[in-house]
Length: 145
Image (cartoon, rainbow, N blue to C red; front, side, top):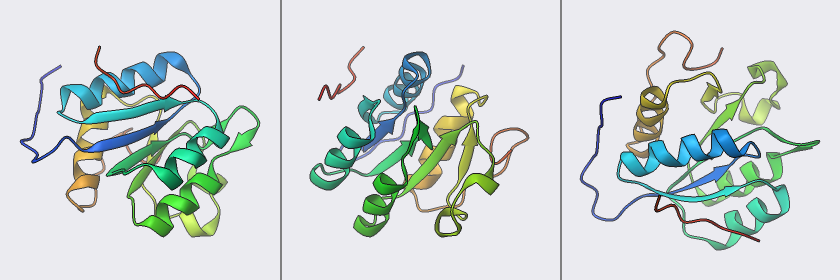
């Protein structure tokens, strides 16, 4: 995979809320390769909520479901704080409450480079471009709590 690294003043801190260790590690690797600092991965809603309230964040990648729990309380806090985020899920857009239907939805079948491009677009306040199958349809900061 080609590597795209942007020159940031400081590494953007991206919250990673995901309960699948393999997927979470892939997401964190993509972020690190792109010059960002993953916060997480965080596999529990309670922990993610605490981080969303208390930690300086530049963005987030959020799985909609962590076990039987949904992550919408975390998303509400991020939205209130003005922290941009994308959903990273196997669920369809119809599973989202109306308040989150405009949030980018990335399928878990996405390739690392496409995920990186979505997060970079999120950080630059641009709408991610839709590529087929992408949207809709080491030195990680590990939070252990």
